[in-house]
Length: 244
Image: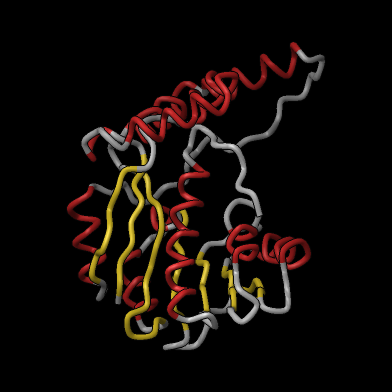
């Protein structure tokens, strides 16, 4: 399955990162079980994991939102891929994916400790999080205060002859605002050994997404490329991997 064009949030870079780790896991165990925690409706990340999965492997997408689970099963479910609200049994997973989910959790350390028991010895976790004090969170805070992205969307909707604005929840809903060292310490305290931590994107939240979307794929790729040479504290998102 081809990956989508890059966007301001570095979504394709994140997908490629997750799939690269999936390939490494599959090379060691073709019948691996992959848990995608916080999978949502499956359209953003899950469908690409399922598409890259070997026939002998198993995918389990877990989310608490009933409507999203139903949608994901209908559109992306396969004999070896299911979506549910129930976690797999302990010691059955080879890999757990956390794609932009840890920042939404009330007690992430406790959950990671619980999930550590789901993994087989040597099992890996891989995911993405926003820099809690980076450009994304700063822009999002300003946007929540002044409703900039909603005003832009409303203006474009009217210019197109549509009097009803496209609904969008501009509140990020984040409960955790991670800094690098405390985040890595949390992963270690949960029983994992961090194997990789790298920059994702330089900038990009809803205001820049609406303003700069006309820049197209070259601008979006430049956003992820620039992040590679910046210090960790200057970027919007991080990618990470760890091993049990």
